[in-house]
Length: 152
Image 1 (cartoon, rainbow, N blue to C red):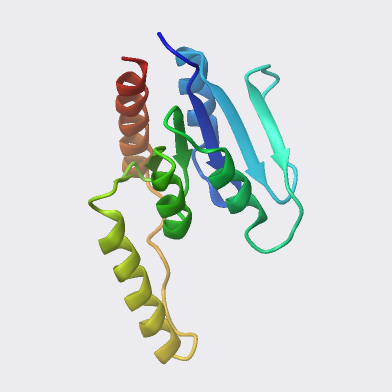
Image 2: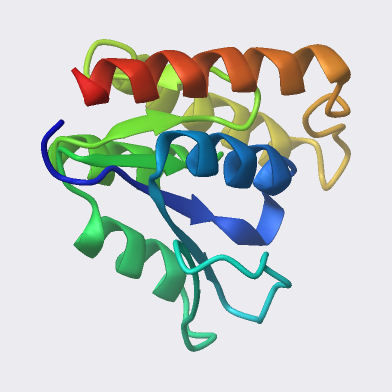
């Protein structure tokens, strides 16, 4: 096995932190929990809390600056995903969807369209569907698949 895998978590809105900790322990991966405010993390030397200042995109900037080909970034932020893909990182959304160079352009375009639609609705809109057990299961399957791929 080559260099250690590092999982970088965009933690402020991440519903799968506990799952990440369990998988990371099994694979002996490093975890960086990046946020603007402290989160409780497990007592594990491989898990490190990174608290950045509250300036706009500070957490995203830290993650993008530290992502590389041995990283898995967990985020729902499409623009951060694009930045991390350019660094060679693997990027997973909380529901298990993997962003890649082939899909990121479409995701960015969809994001822009939805933003325009919401702006035209004067604040009326729904947001994403509730996070489900199926989303959690898909995430675990995707994380396991990506971890196995990076360990080869």
